Image (cartoon, rainbow, N blue to C red; front, side, top):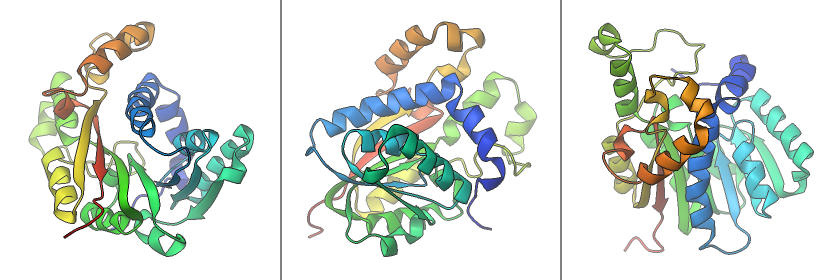
Length: 258
């Protein structure tokens, strides 16, 4: 098995993720967390966006004056990210590397202050090894922003729509060229990996804790503002964190391991 490369479905990914309310809501909730984090940080950070895709998040950091390295295994995604950076006028603040996240330590002159690893962990074949590799890319005192696809949310969504046979069969993915992630992750397993490596978890947020469960899909768009208000109200408390379609975790790398 090899890690997923999106060269073959880049356009589908762009349209079905970033062009939908689920993508807009994901970005809105994520940036609430990121803005709160950045308010406590120096004006300029060195940022690695590992598996950064089309660069929506990376270019936003660059627009704020941060120095950003974006890596992705997909040449098509790198090309799209470069185009976006040019359109936003932030190419001078960005560097692009076609590489798997787990190989990025060799491409960095020094460890970075912040690693973004969003919606990638569920696509790799060995998540624990990737998280260990990212540890080496981050300076002591730095922060990891990790967003992963939640197996609990996948289960709940399929039960809501009555896919009982699919759930009974273990919810195994049977088509490669879909946007459904290859390896949904159990939150407690991810938290354990992080703590085992040495990170201290500082925050957890459920992403899309209500959106995907709405019976009336028109309300996802027509009632988006109210939906965002309610997602914001509940997404950082249980049981809603553990029911989000994604979970965003921030984790701190201590200055000393002693």
